[in-house]
Length: 493
Image (cartoon, rainbow, N blue to C red; front, side):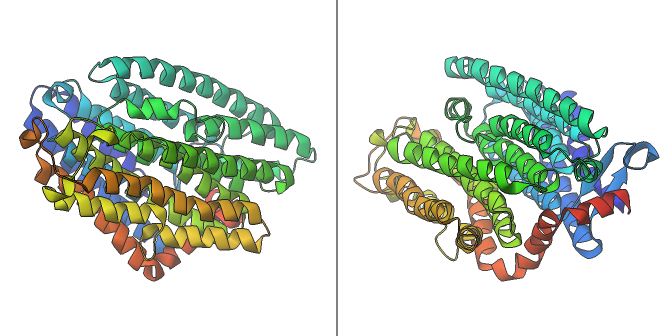
């Protein structure tokens, strides 16, 4: 049964390799890709069930026991993120059938998406810090191709900045891993945690913690390291924006969460306080951007930054309830960001623009798109009882309980400004006098609406089913709050 761990990595890898041989046969590419991601959802669902019933699962590659070999580890946190990634990827692929364009499909779009998911799921699953770097690189190399695929001027311009930033962050990642290895003499993440508890000089640990925060902060787009994100995520078409916005920054957030709960929990006085300050500033920067812009893509992109700050504030408070809130919220945000970017793609396909000043009255001809966007926007802002409410409530309440009043207040106020930013799109873009748009009759709205409508329905069910899903979320939070559970499961101590 432990073989379930590797399936969400192996299935997209095999799917991607198969797809390479059918680059000119677009129908085969589409349905093989969809079938592969559907199979991945089944495998990920089984993995979540297995972890819930039997606890943390491990797989030692080549039968080398930890800490000597490479270990894959699925606790509930990583398993839930793998399942969420699988669901989002499946719906993005379906959406791509009628939106990405045959020119991109002929140039390895579907294989590259599969390889991107190999990197994402591998990063969520690995129990080895160097292999986290390896899976990061698999993910980033795939994202480079997706960012530039199509060769538009804005894509080529933004890809230079995106690649440069990630090359620098990858170099820093290697330096951070080397520095950590020089101190603890191991790469196994559970063993690193054990060895760090034996280090008497906490100054060294603090320096390494800050270095990792810079590395993952660049990838996760925390303040002030988010400068590359708005332009880079603006450039590609809607399906790629959805993958980037829902998944890539969350890998950075996951990495901060994992290292700051498994490695750097021995002396939280400086490291977690620094994380909290950066999280609050990230919320502020994201809210300012979301409120200031009138471009619908930019508004949702800046809301990615807001969510990163909210999640990491919960991590910085570092109580079981705050961590549960962060787990709730990261799953919600991955899902709802994918839905919103796909909905924005529909609006652009109808109107030919993302400028809110040029969009009016869409609700009269496209009520399904309008009301789906309205529900998704309410969920994004955390309106009860939708999916964003439970996680944000736990984070805010934990912040007040820990006497982190300023941060909790900013998280609370961000909900109002996030709601304002997305309702601005709904009121100005969907209401008002209807108008005709050039080539709108060519937009396959019914097909494109299928994926974001189901993702939005999931946000509704996730919100209403909070009580039912809470034991699963609580199990994930318990492992994050008590690293010895993870250590014992991997090292069998």
